[in-house]
Length: 630
Ligand code: PRX
Image 1 (cartoon, helix red, strand yellow):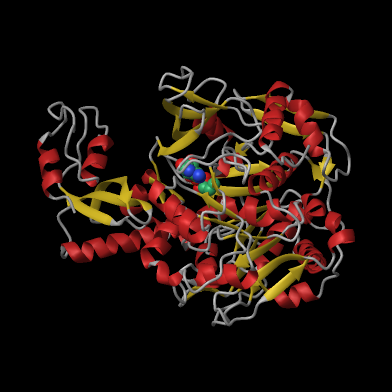
Image 2 (cartoon, rainbow, N blue to C red):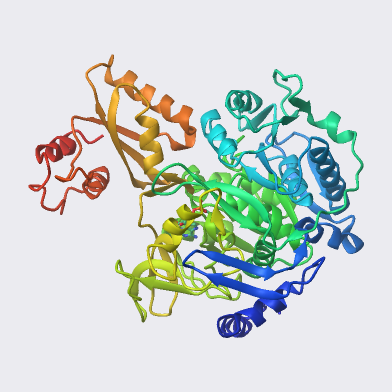
């Protein structure tokens, strides 16, 4: 049964999903339109890893997102578009309009030479065209690689080149609060060194001045308007790539997480329906950006696969003031609101005067995603936004998991502040110690692994399968390792405590410390750096950088400013350190390994239990670091 409506149905579904996973998922998959039925539900081994779902099946995900709904929902709203400027042009996109826009853009992509199996880079603001773009790629079997608009030219270039994208879809600029951000100029800078790119389609959003390169750059509207509003879906294998999304890990450059079609479709649709308990006529709003996995699974695919009506918002929570979210909820009678703890904490800090003017009585379900939600923020959200009347779904998942794995089902699972609670059907969590021994029983804590595949699990890291194996499947035999620490309470509820690797979660954005370090080291005055996370009231975690400088720099203030500029250039403003401490040395073992534990403690202003520092190469650096803490 696709829709779970009470806790005993959840228990029954969960039990079946573990005891007879193939029977369970076969039934769920039967709710979708397959051009050719699959012959086998699952093939898997976590050692290679090789994971295949709904084998031999052929389908097109956009047919399931759009065409399938047209007979009953042609004039129903797929999504409302709320622009950055509260008095800007609002748009209502019906399923029929969505169909036409997607078909035209799909035809346009074909006319630029994009074929099934090609990769297309999407670098766009949060406008309807971003959703059309993803679906247009999927319509013709091309894999999209959406790059968040806040990434720099360098970061964009690395991502385009890693997967050899053929076309970039972008805009002239983007509105973000009271700022206007260049997009095309950033693309131009990236493309100086992207040999695979043949065409760039540029949507005019801000009308700021841009240059178009003859033979390469095309005006979006001119090209799209030439096209027919019908485009037959390209049927692809269930395991055909749907998209690549780059995400940071503890080492090296960001990796391209690859998701495929059939399993991703089934799981995002199933999890959306059951976690949010979305029903006909509800208005769902997820405030994420399409540049992150939340935007893929729970703005674009999950809601549309369910024929839902949602909201796409271009702006930011604090513009024109900190009441913007609540004003939008009031205006559109939003019933389901899904956001990140960092936004909740920022709006809490702005004060209740920004909440009070608005009628929030339409709300039925609240969601949280991206990082652990602290109890205080949970209660503030529950009391002031949900008015103690809306279940909060604290949804734990990752770019690699494709969909929500551990979460309450709204109104069905009893919630507990800061707990993601129970696994969804099909998800088998396991806690292990550092040696990989299973930690059984309740009231325990360990590293979170999953022991059986679910349909939207990562298939590979693009172009480097061995990296996928190493990162997720090699730490513990026969287990998918999440990189998260986790508690299980007396009732078997799960609480994610945060990353156990060198990944920091800044405002819900995943940032690899190694990546920030290599950006900082690009500055010629820096010989070495070490980056750690520390507790930050609003962002969850902040970035603390310890930098060893060579002799030559003008003064400390200028150097720190330049370091920030260097990071912005190489990654983007989201990875800028919050604190920079210039040091003479780093605490290293005799074998040269940086003792990050010490650096984390100093960053947290906790000088207790620094451990035995006498074995360090140079024990005096610890004292220096403690004294110079910023
Ligand atoms: O540490 C976990 C945290 O975010 C990481 C995944 O980041 P990303 O791939 O960018 O995806 C974010 C959106 C799904 C996880 O390893 N995380 C995500 N959701 C939660 C969370 N931590 C605690 N509670 C959550 N609900």
